[in-house]
Image (cartoon, rainbow, N blue to C red; front, side):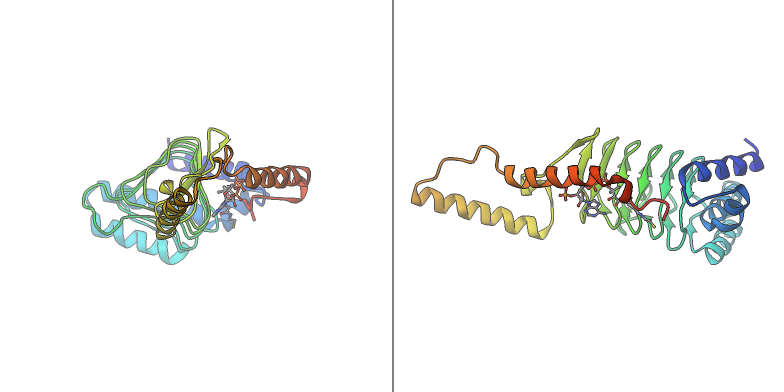
Length: 244
Ligand SMILES: CC(C)(COP(=O)(O)OP(=O)(O)OC[C@H]1O[C@@H](n2cnc3c(N)ncnc32)[C@H](O)[C@@H]1OP(=O)(O)O)[C@@H](O)C(=O)NCCC(=O)NCCS
């Protein structure tokens, strides 16, 4: 597809995805995330033609103008939308599929340890909230969503939502995933919880264990359900934050 046809396609996709965008002219003149992608397309061609230094210099011009640092070697699919632009970093071996949305401050980076393919792969339709970091040669499956501020260090299955540091799954194929085993979150706090649970087990055994709780998080889940129902009732006042 020709350069200008792709620009028209990019503008149409922003009008589709961002409720704040009102006209083609506004998108053309006020969306530095799109300029960054367009500059990258040129610098990527220079990179492929082995004009490596020129490619890197052009990508630095793009960074100066837009605040988005895309290595010219990165492979970006059609209709990538980088909303608000500033602070986005995309590494050399990153691969981004089609119709991906990234918010400001997103890093598709390396862990500092790898060589070769050391940056993430984002499949088609992935959404990444602001200031999320996706690090290393991991794959985020098609149509998955990464919450704002998350740090993703392992593969994410398709059609999932992950949040937190380190990121864990909260939705998969539209179903809520509740973590009831601290082993499923690998951070220092979960180690402390695992240790505490083992200690409680040990004490219960010494005292004579009470009847096991059939639904360990029943009260919390009931509270969440009530909260969600209330949110649904108020949905016309509540927004996920997209398009702000
Ligand atoms: C991840 C996200 C897409 C999920 O939205 P959702 O499908 O509506 O999910 P919910 O709000 O039902 O959240 C599910 C759980 O994840 C938690 N959660 C959601 N987003 C989170 C985040 N960014 N970090 C940590 N936890 C988060 C919620 O607290 C909730 O947990 P709980 O049920 O234990 O209370 C959304 O929260 C998000 O981060 N969007 C990014 C928006 C953005 O970047 N806007 C920038 C505008 S400039």
